[in-house]
Image 1 (spheres, helix red, strand yellow):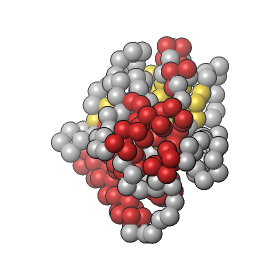
Image 2 (tube, one colour; image 1 turned 60 degrees about the vertical axis):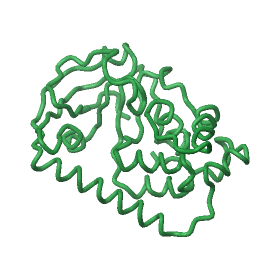
Image 3 (spheres, one colour; image 1 turned 135 degrees about the vertical axis):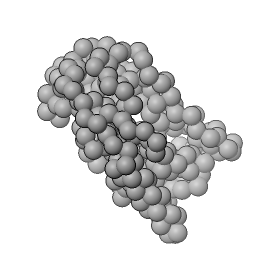
Length: 229
């Protein structure tokens, strides 16, 4: 990552001064200011079927920031899932899912609040569904990883610490038109859903979450797919 980067925040509002401590605690990585280096993705995330939005542009100085890159090969797909289940609200339908949530947090969890900045997958609706299916023992970890890699999944940059917030400079905004960007957003989601359905049709003898729990599988197990930066 370059030290000085341009990031975009998709929103219904123009946000000239991002404020530390605001936002929803049940976002992917907890409280923070969620951005992307892609202006097109920011515009997709900004719109709804009924309303236009804004892609707010900022310059961010990353020098001296403590950065966690969940998409690097240092981490596995289960590190991302563990962070997600700790912060997002999942549908826990079975005893297996309850045990899975606890196991993932204990064995694969990361304290995201120890970092100034986090980069990682963004759990759009389809990808959140993938993670939920894995948690409920419906798909294997290999199927989960493959679905994530095949899908055109956006990478987000989350500004976490007060120090990181002090490094943001507002540079302006661009309008995000719903007639264009909601269509693109829906197309992305539809493609992700089809990828998921195609993978479900395939035979899989990989590791389900119940196998991972029973086997005491840890993060250094070679059977757990590593992320690709």
